[in-house]
Image 1: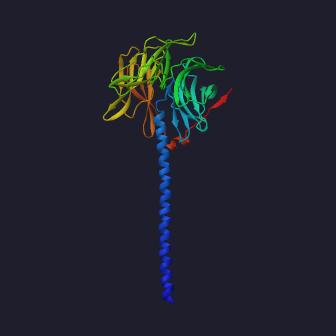
Image 2 (image 1 turned 60 degrees about the horizontal axis):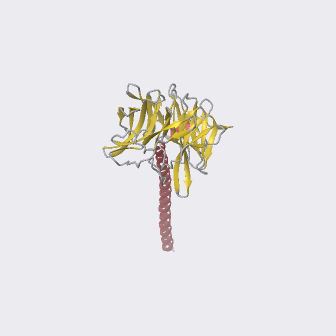
Image 3 (image 1 turned 90 degrees about the vertical axis):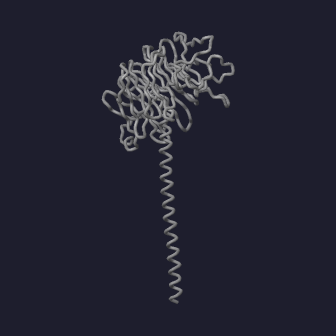
Length: 360
């Protein structure tokens, strides 16, 4: 009898050992899945931040740029350059992007994108109270808005025609329907800026079958550019399209894109992609409007944001693992860091947040 009891005890001991091992394995697997999920979310957020890095704007007092706060939403980081005050401006679970300050710095244009429906709204918001008015909305993408005159905004608008997708320029004025300014059927629009009755923008070309205006770009060539300019008659809201093919501007070693122009139309800043030490980087270039290079600044990360002019000074962002850093290049072409924005989750959780309010 005692022998049977001993055997039973041994069996129970073995079974209990197996159970402990199984529970340990399950706990490890559960912990691994949790860690993997967190890593995946962090990776997704990082990729979103890298994708949105090019979006950046500045005024005399403020800088603003989108920051992915989780895998679903992106808020605007707003920094007062004079006081150092920082805040996040958000709209629930929506993505806020493509910010652009007005000339006087009192308003900011924002694209609000609903991740569930895919709808896009172009907003004009006042900085002092973050009240926003809807200028236009669309089920397709709206990109790169810029204020031409008070409450008259130029932007790139996506059209979907079956499998074909392309962009053109629209104009919208408050309380008016959008006006189609072009019929170019562009592959993309990467940045748009206005000056001296001109539009400067970057595009890879046109998908239109009868396109004769836009040349085919060669981004892998030793020296190439996708930057173009067109004249505009704003009194008639009409593009002046030349009879000849457009020429790419600022063709230097590398690939030039994402231009912006100073308010007086005398200087331009753009990004130039080059292969350095086996790594592609988007470097910052400052030049006269005629193309004389005044400063070439190599990025210490994957690249700079689209630059912004404040007077003749140029500002741009870089994204590091745990922060954004803003660089300012003065009129004498000296560069210095003027702002830092911490994107560690612990820092974002305690940062002041403001929700935008849509008004009629």
